[in-house]
Length: 357
Image (cartoon, rainbow, N blue to C red):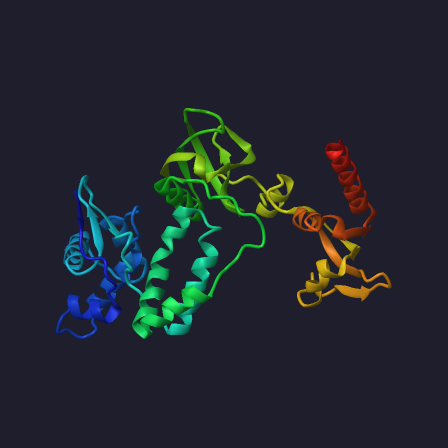
């Protein structure tokens, strides 16, 4: 059974008062605050043995029994969860609790986080976004305390709009996602139930996590399989159903480079590392915004006798830029590089053929 206490925010000064009422700022208090910083948010959990080792690394020598007594005492006044279904007991901060936060957040920081919440929510996987949700809750609490009307007016008058089409985020298994993040960060192997696209059943995999890549609405795990240690691959996180972290370090392939891997496997928007001189004629209304928001520092614009704008700049060969250009349709004519002009010429012919009745 899980035991859960109130999930309201408790500041460090409150912790000091509640845990060591009437005492000075002594080593036990510092140790307890340090220990609270080491406790993960649910569904992840830690144990008294792990806390003992990590506290020792911070210079606090304490036995497990003392740590257990501290945890029980702190649970009475803080939003901590004790998973006592098995021994040793696991400890977490409540998922909806704001936990221990310092220093105090001022209204300007709170307004900035409120805007960031609107921007991040559509582009982050739901499980990842929820993991940082307590920061936004805290920001909203600060705004309400400052002026209840201010936060309402802010939300009514500010919008964050996407520049391009965004797909709905896939549904992730929360505990599997967090375990993969933890294993990747700590360089540990995992055993996982993974389901291939189109399969109705998952299979057990022994995996060496190498990195994480976020592209659009999908997060990918870059990894090695235990049965094939020479060929890294990428697996969408939403296809993981269960993950167990092993107490074994990963075996990383020699000279592995995450940027090179994403480029080779078309996970990045880059076609190549090379630069080229981009020149194109835009209809005035289509490219007028480039006068205020240039492509980069090398951009030059010159108005032509026919009213169009000649735009030139040094650009990297990327899929993202090419897709952006396609969005202008007939409002743009590519001049250079000749390879890009040829691509657009072929696209125009293919479209005419497809739509020609």
